[in-house]
Amino acid sequence: MMAAQSFDSGEYEFALCLTHDVDRVYKTFQAPYYAVTERDPSHLKSLVTDERPYWKFEELMALEDELDVRSAWYFLDEKRIWEQAPADWLDPRSWMLYTGRYDVRDPEIVDVIRTLDDGGWEVGLHGSYDSYDDRKRLRDEKDTLEDVLGRPIRGGRQHYLNTTQPDTWEHHRSIGLQYDASYRASPTYGFDGQYDVLRPFDDNFVVFPLTMMEIDLRSNTPSLDAAWRECRRLLAEAREHDAVMTVLWHPRYFNSDEFEGYRTLYERTIREAKAMGGWVGPPGECYEQFVTATPR
Image (cartoon, rainbow, N blue to C red):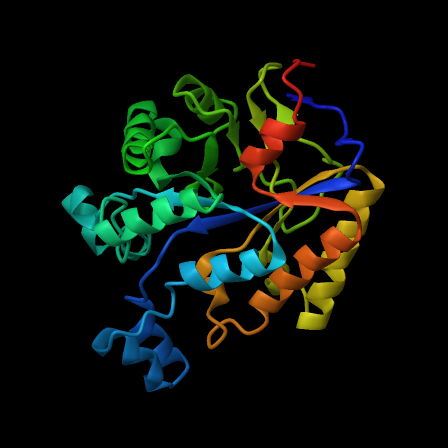
């Protein structure tokens, strides 16, 4: 696996790539779970009203519009529970993986995807959990998303970062993707010495290492203030090393009633990156503008 040279655009100090994995857009089985564990029946409102606490497309687009940035949205075409073997239907893990999902062909989701694309956001593939070693399924999911979008996509990320390296990347390259963003740079968050994209095949297919995911950041810091200090530290490290830094914020974490402070961390990270002289945008645009086409 070969790394590209350090990020050096001449105009920018480093790159901050913004990504969102669209896992769940409806609050389903989580509602009774939180109602019981938190002894708060208000979580059940979404089951009996039109309230959609995880539907955050418009809110997040408005925020990024205000910040004058764009991001990548990776859409999931996951299996349904009835597609599994009957023996798996009683497995709690199967319910976690395959229930409460959405259909990328649903007219409302189609409208969201096309609105994002029209507005300059990147739409990419969130490969389903089992597609990491199933090239045909991965190609079918890509074809379905491209049919909805109306044009080719550049890349995406595997669900739960589920990959076998380099086999999954070979699948990605073979079906026409230009990049993958599934590789975790650190077991928790951080660079661990990996400051640029990777070239696993020494050609134009690249891997954007994931520097920071919101839930890993918060679960490994004692407070929001501490989480913010870590964000700023990583941005300073990115600037020092001319890095390509990739962050993941799931849309549902912008529901401030359940996930206090996550939106603020995201907004402050973007504002600070721009103040430090960083380029901010989606990986596909970073690939197109700054990742040289000349193999290392």
